[in-house]
Amino acid sequence: MDVENALPTLLIGEIYPWSEVSRIHRIRNGIYQKKGSLISLLTDFGRINPCYPDVHGNISDTIIYTGSGRHGDQILEPANRTLLAAVGQNIAVPLFNKLAVGCWEFTGYWQVSDAKYAFDENQNRMLWKFTLTRAAGC
View 1: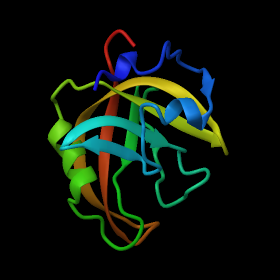
View 2 (view 1 turned 90 degrees about the horizontal axis):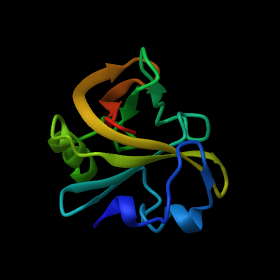
View 3 (view 1 turned 60 degrees about the horizontal axis):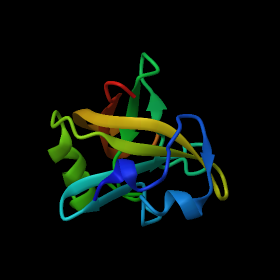
């Protein structure tokens, strides 16, 4: 799937309705993969769904992205396994930030640069934390 050509033009900071975002990200879950290939990502930075507390890293070109799994310790199910396999592969995927119902901000193209499996004291469970880095030229 040629994600970059799926929408006519994706502009960083532009707001898109779900009808446009879903042309790329065809599911409601945050990690969209197909046959083990990472396609796109969704976030809300924990504002709407606190069990996925994604945050910007030390610089604005870095995001700490929480893996898939709402209850109990997260496991290496297909979505998390796909993110783990993408570490260091220079695969750039679009990331959309949910602002409100039907309103999604395009944040640019991101690459998975690191992964850690660590205990989160706030949620009292093990979480996959993936470091996303803004793709070069984006």
